[in-house]
Length: 441
Image (cartoon, rainbow, N blue to C red; front, side, top):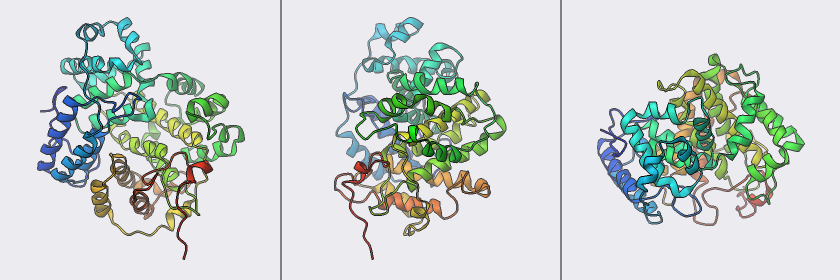
């Protein structure tokens, strides 16, 4: 049985939101490798706060039907550069029960091991659902602050939490909470909470689709030009520095009422997959934006969060609203790239889904981002199928396009040259400078 200290995957109970036939032997291999990761590695693989993706990678391989050998190969490839685990400080861990001490430790990377031990104990005593509601989703200052941090770090704490919840692994949930605790809360303070206030609270009926809002932010010249290629952090130094009120104004228009939950969930998944795939340059080889793929890779977990019994409906709506607003902000921060539908609809299909999964599992350079992306796209096809009749503005990806996007992802990550896997900030010319010209007949 999985606990706050032990990984234990079972194909019967822990097969995930989307899978391609999980195996018992792979569950055992993944459990062993993930346990080693927890006991040996820090959640950041360097002092700059770059995230350890081993749990994301191995769980994606497991869900996509990979073998024990696939698990071991991926673990060894990513094991080599990880930072060793750091022990916690007993006195600090004990004092985290005090609100003042908890607050004092927030945002400080050195306290990650202390927060990890603390949340492991909390989950062991109270269970995952109770701890989530107390420390992330409660209507108090401390939980509100933690929620802000959950959406920081390019969504990594949220993605980590999603994997822990999806595969029923309390120790990964504890890692996610500890990871969130040491991230910055600035994005929440400067964007999510002001947008929520401007929207007059949570769960109001939304009259505009995410697709409509994406079109509108592109037409707003102040906003669409607010990020510069020279900005170190294009969200903080660009959009929220030069056009904060404009960004908040549009973000506040993305709202989700209770009766819109299923539709908005599908719409969010559909639109982030679309803008990630359609942001191409016809003269250049196909490439996906590294920042956009995080919006896609985190989208899959909302199918779980939107129906999680431990969460009340207000929290589910709030999470989806924040995700949609993050997707808008991310799109603007990368220069509002032109979206070319024909780049998807004209793309040749060489591989079916099983072949795509096999390529993603065995990719020699992937650290998990590709496997996560392909699984999230395949899941999106499933979720959005019943909503495709709403038309291309609300649901721009439909039918064969899902498989075409999967093929784009696999084909675009072949090679060993610089930027072979992904490019960064597709709305700027500089992002494409090193990308090879597209072959022409």
